[in-house]
Image (cartoon, rainbow, N blue to C red; front, side, top):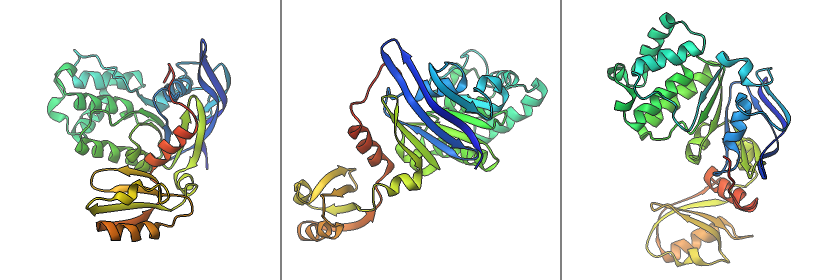
Length: 307
């Protein structure tokens, strides 16, 4: 597959803080790639280096065949986690302004802006000032500024921030449409459920280093298919038995169980049938959220002064 982004051994420090250390990865064209990690892991610093906002101390970067995104600004879109909209400008003016920065004429930008406003259910707000919009509406406007010029490579840093489930679904549909049309998306998010649904491949970084990467299916297969999902009524005392259960995550409506070493899921089901009323029981792969927690805890403490 053709490569959209290639990173080889990049490092970036801020005084004594090593924000990114010897990071290497490849992102293929036409995929959604998850750049994941806890707060302070180095995700945003990495994205800023890819965009040419920061320069790496060492290592190399290649973006669509160039050294960084500053050489091809009209082929790249970036949605930052922090909003960068001018609050006293109208929605339509902000969209056409950003489109012109990406090389579109005002005349060409106007109909595109209207199309996207209608698509994301903002048409009636086109002449309102940004400060009059809700947080979720502002997020949708900023998303439109990122993709209106149809970039080949899109960086999305927490794109679902402030969105309700309906609008999250709208943004998700647009992302899939962009990929279908040939764009590549780099998604940085804390929402593991969305990352698991959307990403073709991922890199999990912690304390500036890659601790897990590869195609999503391959990553999940490394952790085996021995997790149990149990819905029940009653008091499940067996979940506290360390000889039976290595770990248990309670989500209210169900629990996810990791059996103890050498314990088969069927043994957990047998105990459950003896102690509680079982509504459902499934043997599943670990969720990306579970993998995230397991790997981050196993790779050392989280945190850092730079995201």
